[in-house]
Length: 265
Image (cartoon, rainbow, N blue to C red; front, top):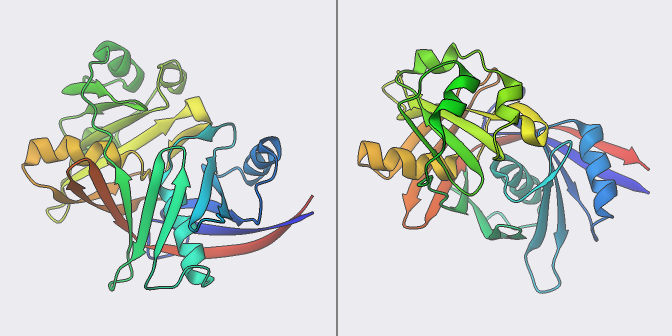
């Protein structure tokens, strides 16, 4: 058995930045155990498997090195990029994905960005702030949680850059991961963030599309605007444009293929 894998850097215009994801286009999904082993072998924050549906569109599943997850933004962007690039979806059509988080749609814009239509994931429930503050070593301004992640807002971008987190304490939080965010120093940006997910085998994710489904409503409430530009300030870094539209979030970004490989099994 041979699988073709494409490695794509998402939320960036240039190679070796943004968030790398592996994408595997298959006629039929392999067994879940095998997909998990492939994801572990790739050792990227996400490996996506995509399969055509008889009814039209695509089935899409995402795996970290240790777990299958309900939602992943950058690997969806990477998958759509591959389908458009390989002409498996026409450039003027919409890539429609059926996932554990429902139907997701991706279109290619005239400016070259891919636009993903995702569910909004507002954080509107309380979360013990002291647990988060102890884990990141900084007193946060606001703390909350949604169905996936906890979130904490800091006073400044410099605080966010200087974080020295306790990864074991973050791993002990009963969530998928932790979003830490702050207002941006750059006047061309609205907010910045970092994402930590040791619970699912991703200590710090370079750029997390799904986290911006929470960040969009979070900052829309604070800034009084629905269209915003953001940067995830990990070591690799990446840019995400967001637009809140009722209970949906439009996520926009670029992607570039850096590797095509055949895996023999």
